[in-house]
Image (cartoon, rainbow, N blue to C red):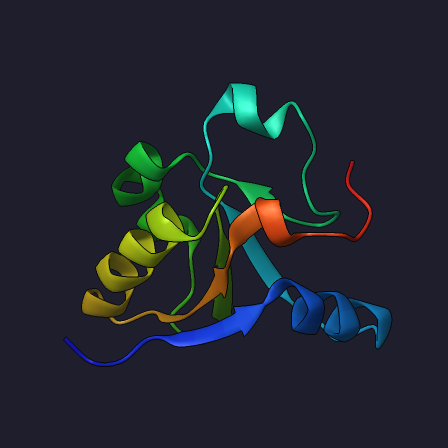
Length: 101
């Protein structure tokens, strides 16, 4: 397995403040997302990722988010194995201090 790229919640928040164009995917379950999501994130629960590969582009880099960073890490390995460029947000939403919707 090749090494995953990672980003901290603080680094992600800084990129958003700099108005960088980012592709975020939140892989938490519906009840978790109901508690708040990072603005602009697309919600695809972890178990549904394989059925949504056709909605993702191998030309873009996706930042994968979950509650604590474990599920997003697993999703990153899966997507990376399928030719996608991914970054895991370490610490997940537990580390996120920015705004949520």
